[in-house]
Length: 240
Image 1 (cartoon, rainbow, N blue to C red):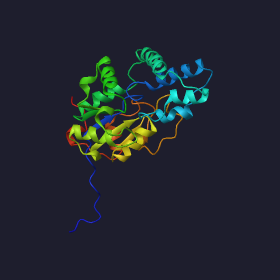
Image 2: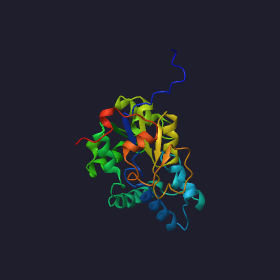
Image 3: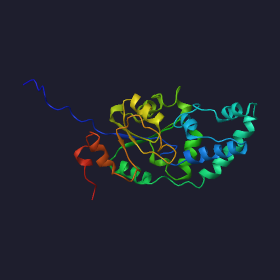
Image 4: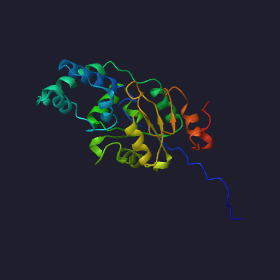
């Protein structure tokens, strides 16, 4: 028999790749709020409609240039950026891991899945917070903007993470919070679960495979099966 008409085999899930900002920690709210303070100090308002171009990428929106344009004069951007950086750092220090992230990483380990972070932020920023929260050793690979030619929405970061893990893109599941991140995952040929944060929740999401309120919403095993991944028989039940 030719076998025509038989169902295509499900790809086996081998890895999960997580964004960092706004997905592992809510660092998106503090930086947005920090720039809002800077704008208000100059009598202006920063809206999400403008700020959204900065989400999930690097260099998509220059707030200092935008503020200077509104005021009709050049600003001391180095000074302003340092003030915002310090304000943002203080706010981020009080941010916990987002709900369900620790459990997600624990289940990935129990399922013997490879794990990575793929972030448009700098490696120093990402690594420092992973260490701060004691989860750096939960990841087999970290890829940041230092490692690629183009950040999200280009697929480079996700492809680099898959290569670092030694896993085919089609066997990776991405967790993202921003439109640019979702676009990057799809361009890399990966299925993507969106978990919006308070800043990205009002934005239109460009075709994620599934949207969840938090990482607590569904167990990773159920997510994988719902998205059409296969799991080897010895991974479909928890070890006793």
